[in-house]
Image 1 (cartoon, helix red, strand yellow):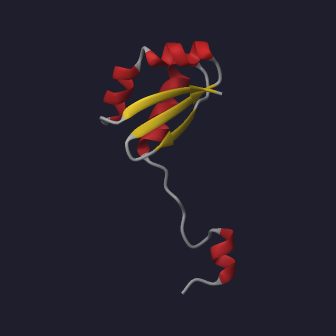
Image 2 (cartoon, helix red, strand yellow):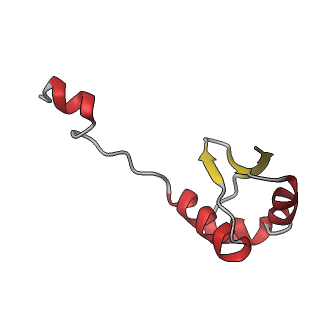
Length: 80
């Protein structure tokens, strides 16, 4: 049984992020030199871009992103 201190500090379990997050972040930085935020849900992957221009440019690379992630989830682009 985990102690209360371990639970509160998060030492008992480390959350692993899905591989799609790292793949998309690396792709955006390698191609556009911009950081994006990525959230993976059951049916879609939401990519939040810092500008509309970045979102539009990244949208043109949707096919390459899906192949890199090896997924059929819907890609949603947000500006924020």
